[in-house]
Amino acid sequence: MMKNFITLIDQAIEIAIATQPDYNPAEKRLEHFIEMLNKLKSEAESGQLAPANNAQLGLARFVGDWVEPVDSPLKSVAWEIDQYYQQNM
Amino acid sequence: MQLNCKTSTTIVISLFATFGFSLTRPQLSKAIAQQKTCTEMIGASDAATFKDSQCKEVKLTQATNFYRYHSDDTNKFGRFMTTNKYNNNLDVIKKLALKQTWGNKATKIITVTLPTGTITYQGIVAFQDPATCYPGGGQQTYIVNSKDPNIQWSASQPLTVNSFVCP
Image (tube, rainbow over all chains, first blue to last red):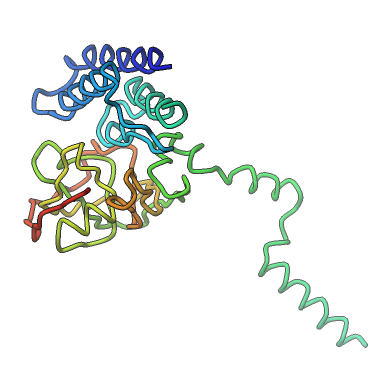
């Protein structure tokens, strides 16, 4: 279960990094998003991830404010992580 | 008798007009088919930012002002805004459920003027976890294209700022 969760985070990090060249360097939200994904991954790997208690992480909500295009794969994977966390962790 | 008949007909026609029963069956089917859910209109992840994933589509008939709250240039621009004007950061963080993990401390306000014809999606802000800190409940307006060059973003004005604590 945790392995699947970390796999999703890795996918998100990969997409986010691949997206970086398309963004204005002034757009710090993508950078912050990658930092948060790495933190999340680290917490998951060390067993320090807080239980979901049916809550979401808010990744897709954060990304949805600014990501381009509006149907970006980054938002899709962020939503998958949110859903996975809420339903399984 | 004739008068009664006319009166009845008038009442029936009025009722039909009032309650919309004058649609023919094909028209009614079309109208029902056009009632899309918020999720169908903007996708599940953006719909989930609205309470109960419910929003309505509103096409602006005139240029309209909305507000957006931010703390630096990083989060000044974006798709989410509100009709609610708040005077301090604590109300903004709670009512708009701005989870502080993501960095928007809501210390400033800007006015966003959307042009005539803009399609907006409007509803109530959903809570974010933990709901005791981020209950939501404010008005939320979402637009798909925040890069529209006809949108006017005002200069930022400072809000009253107090320390936000979430246990």
